[in-house]
Amino acid sequence: MIKLFGKVSAQKSFGVFVIPQFVKIQGVVFMAKGKVEFREAYCKGCSLCVNACPKKILQISKRTNAKGYEVAECVNMDECIGCASCATMCPDSVITVYRD
Ligand code: SF4
Ligand code: SF4
Image (cartoon, rainbow, N blue to C red):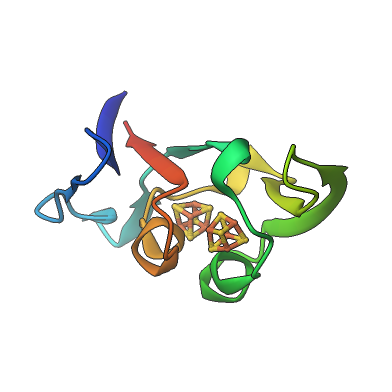
């Protein structure tokens, strides 16, 4: 699994969008397999990632971070296609996306 989108320093984040999210072989569509990680300490529970996810697998949990914000989480990682919509939307670069 490769790191597709994430934080590389305190100031800079990076993204790679050249890897297709699906391939079609003899009419059958195979979706990419993805994984997301959250730097919960920096999440402010704004829900932008939740609303951006096309698979609807993100939610705001009942867990709070040190700042008192309820943090985002993924509830069904098996459904993640590694599209990076969540990470692109997050204003605080909380999310790292990995893709097979
Ligand atoms: S990478 Fe795409 S599918 Fe996976 S959690 Fe983020 S928005 Fe949802
Ligand atoms: S968009 Fe970023 S800051 Fe907002 S809830 Fe999602 S992970 Fe947290």
